[in-house]
Length: 123
Image (cartoon, rainbow, N blue to C red; front, top):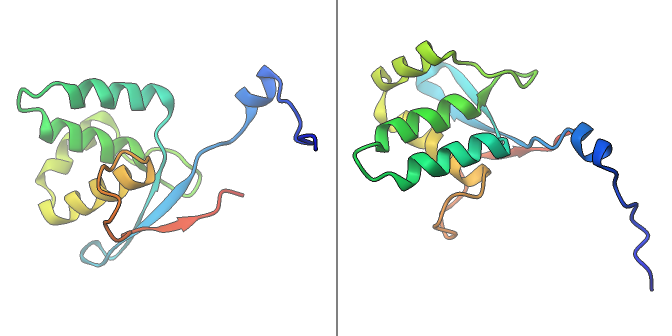
């Protein structure tokens, strides 16, 4: 029995839209936030932040939420300057967004947590 799937070329891989999305309901903000998976570059930057244990937990949270929060077209919602202002928002909501982003990107260690996101099929 042979595998009938096509072998992809480098260009086909580079051209593929492989982002996945999830929504997090945020009633206190009056709607929902759309999150996307990190790119490989962003995930490597996140890993570097995560490996530094010198009090960078807050920076790591801001980085993750600001990089994954996107509009309906997939564009990041926050500029670098706006991302810094996220630290002034409700910590509970910010934590929920971070947890959802970790789960979406399969960076969450606890597999028994109940999902807080509704997956959106990438069409």
